[in-house]
Image (cartoon, rainbow, N blue to C red):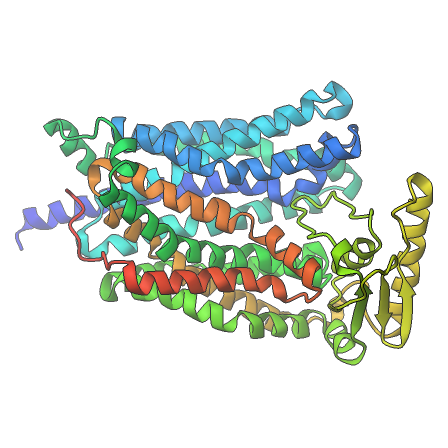
Length: 553
């Protein structure tokens, strides 16, 4: 190779590194912005929903929670179309600006005490903008990097984009934990929670400046110069069966399984530690952060490996392994994180006897519904929130549910005809009696920090993250390769955000509703297991291998 060729090769490599670094860094900051709301939801709820009546507060909290996930597919349609019409670079500059500014504004919003009902309305609006922007960001960044990558390194290059969601979560946890450690808890609850949101304006300025140094994707620029860009990307993507079929296969044969494995490993695991196993929040966040730190490099490894052996076998293997091992892994997590709870479940099983027709399906995404209108619901809601596994036994016609805790029987109140203070007092009395019965047979109210086998917990969490890296590391390259260049941004963004926004985003609350309905703290895992198994079957028979495709056309 001549000196000139070596110099040309070196220059190209530096350019590729800039593309990967700028695209990835910007996407890290967008995920950081998006995760802040979930991590600080309890503080935000106290500031924005405390002054409205209980029903209205529940509706607003549900809307604010759901908005960020629910509108992501619509953001994919809006910005995907723009990206295929006017270019990749300018589109993800727009999405970044919308995300960063809306997040910054959340840190400035006055609370309910200052502006009344306008406060939660403005909060929901900011969440809508965040979700829309994120719906347009991922497809742009993945497409942009892939269209700069050599054909034999596309999986490796795009896998850096795949690290950004995990790194964004990690960054948000670090910033929140730092802010909490620098001030009293009361100060953080009053105003300190705003600091991570306000800090996003600095991240926005840095990432916008870096991305503005980039040129348009060479693939898009070539199409634009030749007049070959799509004039109607939505119609071409979803109005033609040949492409719509690929969108459906991508959703059910790859992305749905990827989404539930991802959310189980990074979000439901944290939810399970805190909600079911009663591990202190700060401790749980620290353990998750260590697991993420250990597992994150595997995004790059599996992206690289997918260039060698293909995308499909790695993604489907991740779904299969996850579906087969979630139950033993989460059982092991209980033994390691709260051994007293595991022992109590073995020696003093809990059974709820009730008329099953009176029991609600306790789907409560924001944790504000008290489920206090039926005796059965009062009993099951208490046990679920206490992280106690229980069996259900039918007792038709019973007006009061009975909770059998070892040899002790505690009757839940018949609250149907009670209201106001009388209902609240009856429920409080029941909860106190049930808690005393649980304590007597060894069910801990909280996990004993000294008894937590932290190395084993971190090892399990890291393994769950490695499952995430298997399904998520190669997915960007596969989605880019599935669709033609002229409609790529639009076509790949929709299945990705339906899968991750809907199948994945609502996983923790759906899983908890299953736990509350069945009584078993592990039964929520059936949701990701069934979806991952569905993806495995569809993927085996319908998903094509894409790793050797030319994506310039």
